[in-house]
Length: 158
Image (cartoon, rainbow, N blue to C red):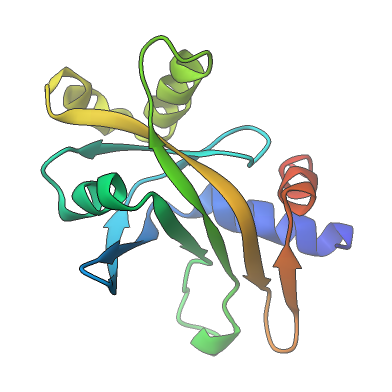
């Protein structure tokens, strides 16, 4: 991936305040809005979600998920030309003993400081999404199948 596209992808991930999470519910796709914080190398994404949420129940039944970040729509351009990144992987509940747990919580709270109160709720847990593959649509006829190496490359552009 060229450096301009890598930088655009990193910009989209870093400026998206929310993401779409796709799970499988009763054999059908189910999409919800979530907050996700990227690891510094984009090789993990962290969520802090309620155990009673439908998407959390879906993850417990089937950890395969998709995560989508979209370029912010300033309503000046054709919305079909907006950049978007879809990441497919698996989601895992984290535990306080996990080596990256402190960093995950710190990254999440830095990105979403208003969420600090949720860390005191007994039904909220931090989850790690581990990407396996992805797709970056950077505009018309600019589509790239993503690997972990591409995600790492993009993370280094900021």
